[in-house]
Image 1 (spheres, rainbow, N blue to C red):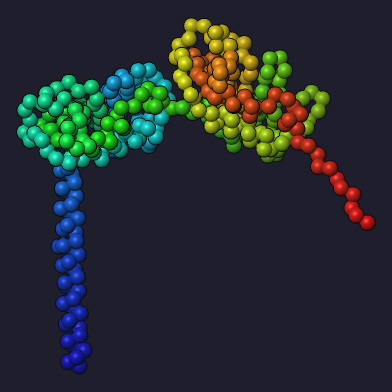
Image 2 (spheres, rainbow, N blue to C red; image 1 turned 135 degrees about the horizontal axis):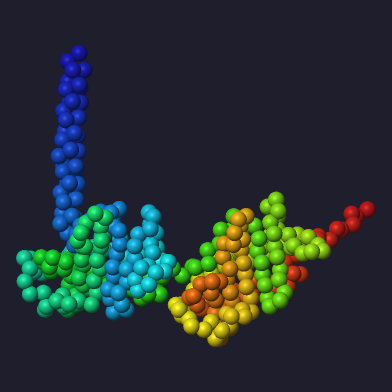
Length: 322
């Protein structure tokens, strides 16, 4: 009985020690670590409350507004779809940015660090806040792979990893959405490929695609239809050629060499015009929209204009051996 009681007492002591270690040592360390990391952060904010981000660098002034949970829309220098991965990466970089060393603690002359009128800066607008959080990026530190930065209030100058410069020095092309011809492949019910006066019409019936014409209804190769859908859906812009062209005929888009249309059960999803080729590129545009783009001309090889290349070939029946 005494041995049993002693075991219980020792067990209780070990339990108390374990509880102490967990709550006092481990949890206490975690809290101290969290406080230390919070102090090291250059800008402190909640990412969920971010409404817009303004980026200023050697390439210009850009602003993007949040749309949905992780989407972005470019509003400056003009309205256009934004590359959500790039803008989310910029926001993450600013949110996670930590100082490695404090240079100037209580404000003062920031000019020696290139922070008086820095070319690179990021501004964060939070929902419900009248003021913006501002990150100013100055000169490179002569010693070490770091940069001088300060917040909008210029309370202190700190050193941060040089990698932040890569995130903030984006061009307009990098900030814009490159995939502009989104096609809902699951909802698409009709595809039309028009080359001059000749048109190929593909229609979906009971999950199968058929080449539709007045005389015949021939089944299409499913892999060829998928290739056409993917060719447009995954097509990326190589160059943003002209945002507001005065004359689209110089791009060959007034009388395009090829027009590819996708329709769902209710309306046209997208209609892409293909104009002149220029070396390895071809001019494209969405119908009834002004911007003109350049894409890789290889896409033309993936869009057949000959019906024979789309029609499903009948398998040849072999005679059974006697």
